[in-house]
Image (cartoon, rainbow, N blue to C red; front, side, top):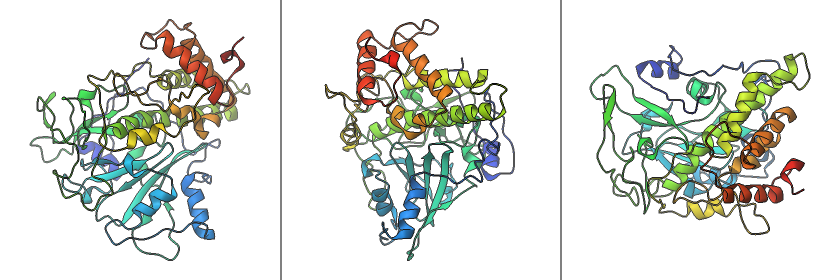
Length: 426
C-alpha cells in the first residue's frame, strides 16, 4: 500500500495553479469525476457551515461586524463559524491565489476547526474559506473585504486549480505543504511536498512560521530553506520563536502565534478530510453504476482500509521531542469532547510522543463520517476492529499498544453513535 505521497512543485505547478498547464506527479491516485451523476459537485447545492451562515445572514439571525482594514470581517467571521483565534497558523510561502499579499513580513493567516477553515491575507480584497460538506466534500468560498449591508460568501470554482490534485486524493480537497524556495532559477516557483501526520517533523513546515515554548530543534519553519539539486540546505537548529512579534509587525493579526499544536492538528486533519470525501464518492458512484447494490469496487475497499489506518495513526511519525505551544490552542481543542464516563476523550492531545493521547482521530465524529454510504462505513469499522482487536497482522501496528487499543474501544463504545455491535462487550 502506498503510505506517503510526495509532491514536487515548480513553475509547472504554478501553471496548474493558474489553469494553463499540466504537471506530472508520482502517484497512483485514480481521479474521480466531480460531475458524475452520483456526485454533481459543480451543480448540486451544498449544505455546509458556510451555506448555513449565508442563510442566517440573509434572514438577519446573524450579523457580521466590519472592522477597519486590514481585518475587515475576519474576527466576526471566525466568531460566527465557531473557529478559535488560537488556531491561527501563519504561512509565508507564496503558493496561493493571494500570493501577491503574502511574504515573510505579511504571512497568510489560516484559522480552522474540524470542518471549516478561513484564510486571511493582509491587504487582500477577500477572505477565503473552505467548508467540509458531509456529502459533497470540500467547498470553496470567499467574502469581499468591504462593508456591506448584507455580506455573504460566494462559492468559488477557481480554487480547484490548486485544490484538485493527486495529493488531495483525486477529489476537491485540502492539503498543507512544506514549501522550499528554489535558489537561483527564476523560472522555478517552489519545491515541496504535502504534509500530514506521517511526515517526519524535520521535513515539516517549510514556508510556515512555527511558535511554541517547546519546539523540536529540527524542522523547516521560520526561515526560507535553500534548495539545491536533489537536496536542500537547512540550519542545524531552526530559529526558535515563542511569538512572531519579533519576526515582523504582527499588530494587524488577531494573535502573535503560529502555534505548533495547531499546526500538528491541521497537518493531521487535511488528509483525513480528503479520504472521507474520496470514499464517499467512490461508494456513491458504485451504488449508481454497479451491477450489485452496495457492492464496492477494489479501489473503494483500498480507500476504506487507508482511511481506517489513518484514523488510527498506524504510521504516524514519532515526535523527536515533546512540544508545547505558546497559546491556549491545545487546551481549547482538548476541551471540546465528547468524553466517556472516565472523562477520556479522543481530542486529548499528547504532544510528548505523538499527536493524540488516544490515537484515534476525532474526525470519526464528523457528519461526513456518519454520512458515508453504509457499505463504506461498515468496511471502515470492520478494518478498525481488525486493528484494535489485534487480528490484523498484515501491517506493523505495534505502535498501538494493548492499553491504547483497549482505551480507544472503550471510548468509542460510549461516545460514538452507530458503533457496530462487535465493538461492544459480549
